Length: 124
Image 1 (cartoon, rainbow, N blue to C red):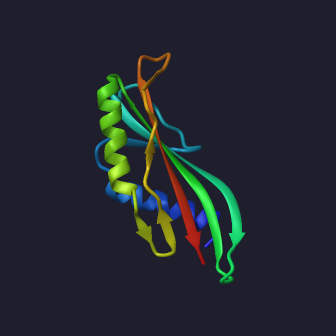
Image 2: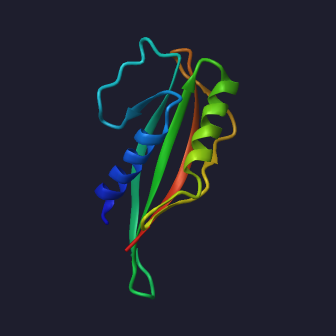
């Protein structure tokens, strides 16, 4: 399974299972005008490797940004998405434990942002 298929499998899983907020997908039109909270999902391909066993591994990162107007709520959303995705296995895709950044970053628009980063491996 290549990078595109891995990205789509993760997005499909999030779309089917995340119900707390709207989701901003990378590259898709999205308006935050009427929202008080949302998450934004970004997939970053990192490398392709071949192990000793001949299995290929696609390594990537899934970055999920949680936005709210209150720092504690941003951390709560980050914790919730981390709980949903950490140690997830979708066929050959393995999502590692999410790493939540230490503090909420105040944005110019009055929202606070907390980033959760997941390392993703896809073995074939």
